[in-house]
Length: 233
Ligand SMILES: C[S@@+](CC[C@H](N)C(=O)[O-])C[C@H]1O[C@@H](n2cnc3c(N)ncnc32)[C@H](O)[C@@H]1O
Image (cartoon, rainbow, N blue to C red; front, side, top):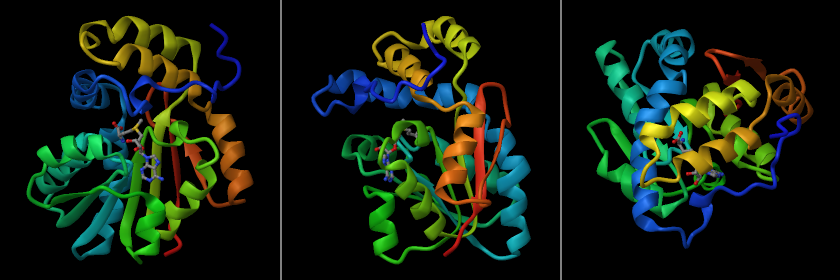
């Protein structure tokens, strides 16, 4: 497997609007486990998001852009509630299939909208923090607009978390996904996602070209990248 260059021509099976609905449903539901195990958001919440929300000293509004099946925003809401933070959470995703699963996860303080970043900007929406998980690698020509829309929606921080492409990540995922993969697209799409993902230095270059001096890239957990920047709402 050649992972020395990003393979952004690859399409994920779940992006096919005609894909098997039962497998798609199982995939979106099982993302909860995968995200919990590998996404590193527990740490990003503690190091970046919770301190920023606490500093506001007032109720906050937070947006998860491209929230998929809604597991991450629901989990972050639970962490914030445990920490006594008063937050209204929104998960937004333009894919109606993902939106249906997310809505079934609705809990107090979390709402889901079937819409995209550009439409939220056009509607004049504004949040104290905007985040995304596994969206950057998913976008081709839409990446630069997505980055600027995410900033336009936030008057505070913007955090985009994603996979960092590497041979080790590919090898470990190939083995580690085995118990979770039956009946889902997790094996094929996870491996394709890794092949589509940025290395930290590639992401730094893309972000610097898009908005010089704005973004910083870190590796908050093994096989993860985090782009952090200020909103400009
Ligand atoms: C790989 S999925 C990640 C889903 C979820 N965040 C997770 O971690 O499981 C990428 C999602 O981004 C959504 N998406 C793509 N372009 C978007 C945009 N411009 N605004 C909001 N969401 C977008 C897609 O519909 C898709 O559900």
